[in-house]
Length: 124
Image (cartoon, rainbow, N blue to C red; front, top):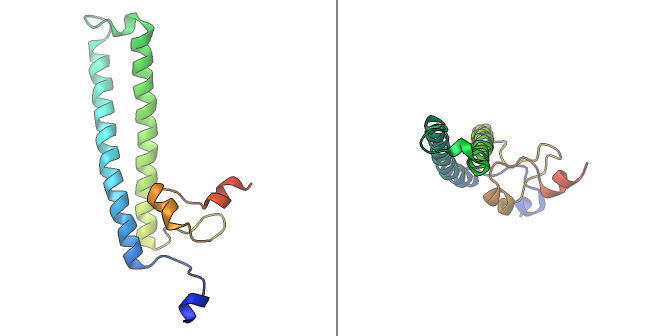
């Protein structure tokens, strides 16, 4: 009964384990995507402008730049997921860095790397 009245200040170890599993799955997928992107970039760079003619047209250059930007974004996402794992170990995961309130489970399941509630994110 007292548990219902008292506001929860952190997620339980069981809940943290659930989030950890979600993060590990996303991390594995993200690392694989990053590996595939860097492999494609290296492959395209090795081909250069010779036989493939990739740099002879704007589309080839644009494709290479797009893959590079995507790879950079993927690295940032990987780093954010790894930081979330640290917060799980510290038992601070799911607590907004701005307000100290618990981030709703639904938000964490969709964006497991987030550090703020939606309200905190939109308020300045």
